[in-house]
Image (cartoon, rainbow, N blue to C red; front, side, top):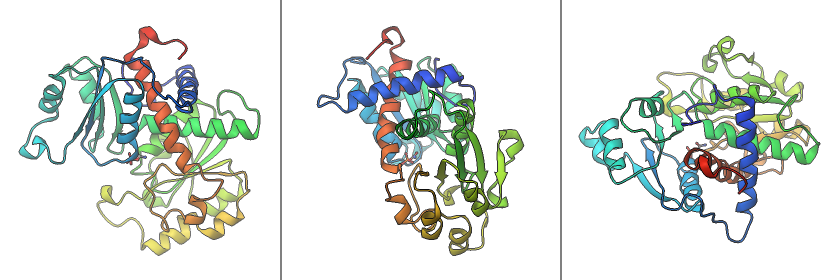
Length: 316
Ligand code: CP
């Protein structure tokens, strides 16, 4: 694996290898000294054209815990405002010596362009490109489900037989796409739940579509993954009002209290509390939201380790 651009082409073995390595990194992160010397002398460039809290800071922490140097670039306040292209920005940042790019961009395909344009030959990690994919989010979500369910039952290394409902703005969600591909590869049964206006072509994605959140909850999924309404990507009106959205598609207190107490509640963040998820659910013991963020550091350490240090890739 040279780049990490998508989960769509990832094999089951590749996914399990990365999840196992992420578990090893989680063990490192539980130590008093959380640093490994593995990437000493290497440089990671965080190239962020869109806002981020979790992904940007966790890639920074991941790089630093592996002893790499890290350069944080935000398009806001940079020469991008003067019209500088992605190519020239990347070449400029790589000129000081770079061993990997982490890129977030509003354009679907931007990570692929950076990886395959011939501008540089270093690994590229997609940290979210438009409405296309967010592969490290898919990996950290799979890691979270696997760790939680392994605690509850003794399950196999993959997610065979686990039922996952992904709920909300599927149309604009790169998180949904990366999760759908990866969860299916790992054997999970995925249902996407959304109003018709926010439902993409599910035949192309190979998942079941549901237009009733209450019917889907009645089928008792193991995992309910709520998604953020992505107002910034909407060109038009997709639902009548926030109150109506919340009543029909939100994880309200009434729906939350009716859930089996073992049901995992996930959200990639940032959350619109009171819109797609109520605080009672978000802050409950069933919620994995903070755990997802912590697992994100371990997953990103695993990905940097795998792509930047393949010759040293053995036990940590
Ligand atoms: N989940 C996620 O990608 O969050 P950020 O936008 O804060 O990075």
